[in-house]
Length: 471
Image (cartoon, rainbow, N blue to C red; front, side):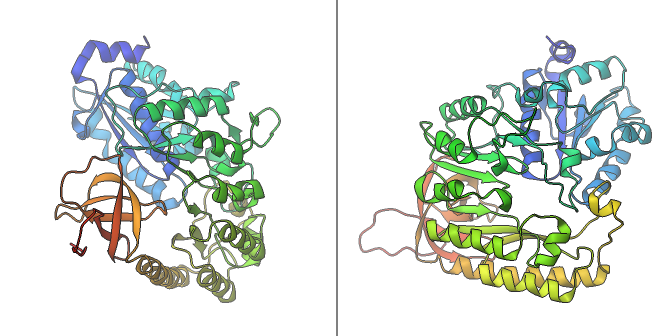
């Protein structure tokens, strides 16, 4: 048993941890891995940080705002060290990888700092902290597959969403877009062995999971042969087909892909693999080829359009969402207008859009590139988001009167006894049902209304001479 496990065993039910997580789906999934790992070590979760023996903050550095939020959180945690309880405090994730030793110097009440690829070392770091030893782990180590070697789900650990699970297939990025900090915080591309992935998917299916989302920073780069780093024994398209063949798996998603790796064999999967959901989140970032070149995105406007056109040939009903950045260094009004025109032309169902935020040690920062004037950047962001809201609402309205399959997640935040879940197109569906519905199951829902952010409906049942109506 590890030192932390021994400690948890000694204190029994008092061994509590509190975990705060910021950032992307990769970070959210890392939080699930951390939680599961700590369950295996004898800890249990608490929502009360004051009651925790161990407090972890899992960080994001993709934008400056998230980084500053971490510093504010850490400053407020200092009193937890003053009492007799002396809570152990650890910081992990992308800011931890980026700042490392500086976090330990700036916040003396932090016991340990671990990088994005060092989750497996948590037990030993917690044990060292118990002995009042501060520690730092940022190295990837010689065994690049070690980062994926985490225990299966603990019997007492229940994921927050029934029926769904994330599965990491690769980590890191080799593209070095000029604005992006990911290669520095998440490291270079490493693909996980397909056998390990499929073993995890099979175990999840046996536990009732019917939808898996394959995760990676540039997920469709999976399997690329990178000397000394990648496994590369199957292409990403073949991995999808193998996951689809696992008994019990009914839905497959993946995120986030890069347009550079949207090869024909992957596009073909949308027409040939029924389990692959008709939704793709394909980051664009800008509709201007000039800005895309400055961003070092390795594709231009025309190439992106061709990918979308080919996807829609293969799967006409596919819902495409995207990421967009406004205010990148040198972006003119004409560049921004090209983004607006492409958003209209391609009719994205939804998008995540942000003002450009310079990050340390990125190529753009090293070259001294600065965002455009903040007021203008904010005005452009609001204009873009207003356009997207209209497109999203129109896309929702086109689905009124149709029926859709929904993977039930649980009670809706709308209340009124409604349930919620996601359809194959990855839209939230809030619906009413005549009786209890088990989370984690698939149900047919008749869409009879919309909001700007979701679809509204009723559970489809066989009725004679009875009309469905919105609740």
